[in-house]
Length: 107
Length: 123
Image (cartoon, rainbow over all chains, first blue to last red; front, side, top):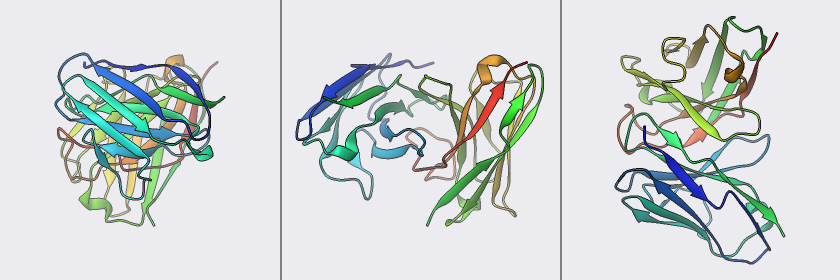
């Protein structure tokens, strides 16, 4: 199976900060990398697909980049509603795997 | 509006069985592949199983292969997960998720999710 490793596991930031979360795959996955936002008690939400494509309806402050094994999710200016847990997920292999998550907390 | 509503969770003893359902509305169910994803308490997301739009192709995580069976009834817009030989480590919130393609192929994503149903395996 392809292993996905996110860093950091948790992050404290303030409203208005620029935040970057990284995700590393255990082998090359081309651009087959998706990002999700998950809040407690809510359905996970697709933010970015194919490494850098913004899902419809997602604010433009979210962006993704990378290819091969290294990927990043950037939030350009944190808003109060962005505090959540973020997951990367590879779809290069059809045994789909997620990263362990990055919990973004208010400083 | 796309809606996915899971049901069927509950408390079950180790070795027992449970059947989860996911009722779909707001899109043409028969056109899209579907998946189940779970989250154990305090843990991250784990993909469990997927099924193609026709139901003709399925796949499973190694952790559930041989114990869980995914199926769908396109006439009733319903996705199911039959879980047998349940273990304590299967305790989790189970989410159904829509795939924006008809097949489980390289490059897909999960574009809509339900809010989950909780399965607890304990004696």
